[in-house]
Image 1 (cartoon, one colour):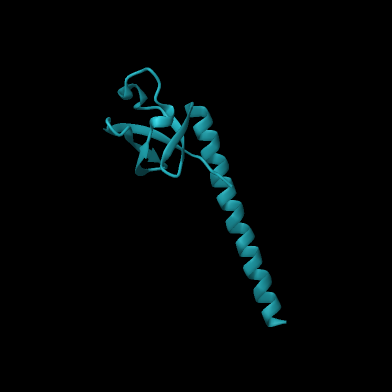
Image 2: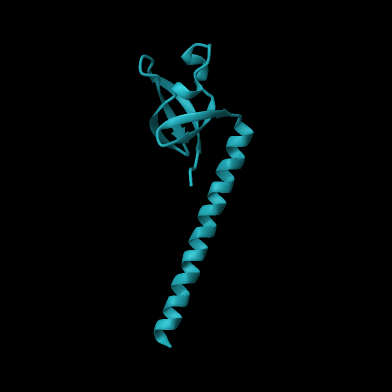
Length: 97
């Protein structure tokens, strides 16, 4: 499964190589922005939200979509933790039976 995580472009780190620093839930990462560069200057992308996948900004999204996506990802993480806890509990019950 491919998963894009919302990130906000905070600075252009290497204009020649089309690299930018992106804030992804408080973590700073350098990503390639070549896929989302249009006719505007690179600096116009600062403050833009994008879906980030394996080091590439794949598409621009608005702030509302970014917030909704981050919320869903948090919920999925919480659900996965709950499922793992249930499995561990079930395995413990089997082991003691």
